[in-house]
Image (cartoon, rainbow, N blue to C red):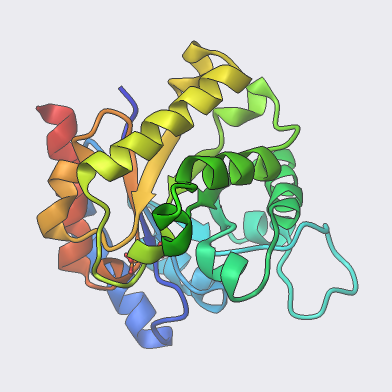
Length: 256
Ligand code: PGA
């Protein structure tokens, strides 16, 4: 069984004191969650502070983005070696806000994915369709295209270090969650794609997270789906109680 990954994407929220407080509140109860991996992804500027709040607690640290070049004249960007240096283990790549607001392409996400993998950082590669694409019956095609582009030339050895996150754009920050059936249908197709590209054994090792309005009251049914291996949580990750309740739901599924 794949250990669920419960990831909090704090986006452009918190300040130096509330970031440290939120991390401390999660850390102090992290020991209660034994069957799920906890991950927090604060804004880049607070990564070191949150790392210090985490100390040696069982909470992983991740970034929300990075640039694919290793260093040099790239004003405003963060390299993978900088993320490694401060102790990040994961990096979210191709989040829909980066794709749709900052204009990131599958090619950009692919370059970042390779840079992260080469440096030993685990990429969380996000895919997801817009509402109009879903309504036009294009969900599978859109997501297959994003997967092909974002994961081009990722080898069988590398793919087990990659986490995929399915985040329907219409469900992000809207309170409109995909039904467990809608989510599982896409997750099952993602697993099928991984099987086609690699093989069933390898596909079975890859964690596929669901993201989009995950809350404590819908977490258990979502995380109970056979191909949903965790959650990427925005709004609810800013409240330690909600984040930990979602993690507890993930752990309960493992124990069931
Ligand atoms: P949300 O965000 O939980 O606020 O919908 C999810 C995400 O963007 O990762």
